[in-house]
Amino acid sequence: MITMPHWGFDGKVHTGRLVVNQTVADDVVSVFKKLYGFRYPIRRMEPVDAYKGDDYASIDADNTSAFNCRAATGTTNWSEHAYGQAVDLNPLENPYVYANGSHAHRNADAYVKRPLHKPGVINAGDRVVRAFETISWGWGGYWSGAKDYQHFSKSGR
Image (tube, rainbow, N blue to C red; front, side, top):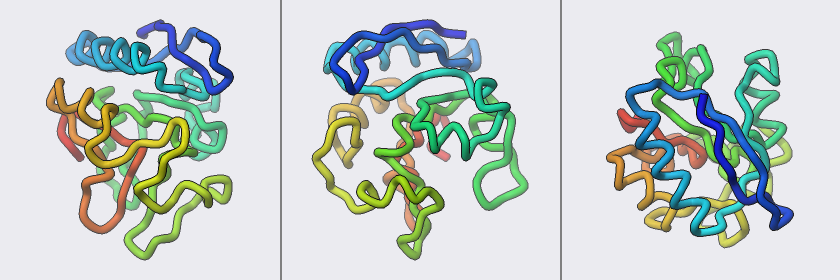
């Protein structure tokens, strides 16, 4: 469990918590220190336990999270989140978009097309993506087919 400050969309400092694998904890902290320095806004950051492990409920709440023992979207394989080696950042502003352009969360309609210059949004090559690249983590926005704009992981998957 990492407890750390982050900037909210209200311009105030909040305290958030992420559960990650111990092997990546220092790297994740280093990235979030950079995001804090950028004053990058994060709506909320709490373990998915607050949502009874329900990924959709966490996403609908625009919750930045890491560990969640679940399968990868559309598969029966474990997600990188199940290993504590992935972070989903501002999932409302950075939705998972299927290859056909649809998405599963109605409240994300305004955030599907990229590039998009709004608070909390992640775009290809921006400073958020570059911050994760400093720890060699891949971004789901670079995937072919479906795009997972919220997703960063150690494996790039």
